[in-house]
Image (cartoon, rainbow, N blue to C red; front, side, top):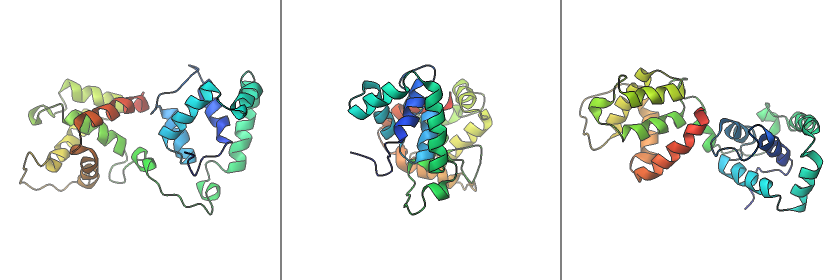
Length: 214
């Protein structure tokens, strides 16, 4: 099924991404694929599936695309620049003028207004680790906390602070003390989405999201 915001001109953008070294399919949540999704408002999953089609050249259009640009990276780069100028990339108010945009996945990759160091995808990663630890080990000194902090380029203390907020979202802990923390609302939203689901689902998502931080 075609996404309502997909445009066949985007094949140029996907081909350019596909040809970037290392040449080939890019991970589902690679930073480059996510950035392209944020530019076009087309979800990463759809772009990933389209890239898979591109790889197999399963239509006359894609075959022609490879014939035209496959061995001419300069021509491809020039036409991508031209496309972005025409479509107004970087000027979303112009690009999507008259088009109703209901943001969904985009919000997960944007900094939280409560703390610009964090994004919802980072809270997802921290929640996954939260379920692997016990409250006493949710500290900046714990190796797993330090490793995750290094991956996401934040401090271990911030990871531990988020875990502390998650404890107030966790119904099994029955925390009856009070907390005044601006992160409570975004943490509760992530908990509502994943905290009561199958932990394997969260674990699989967190494993994919690691590519975003590499």
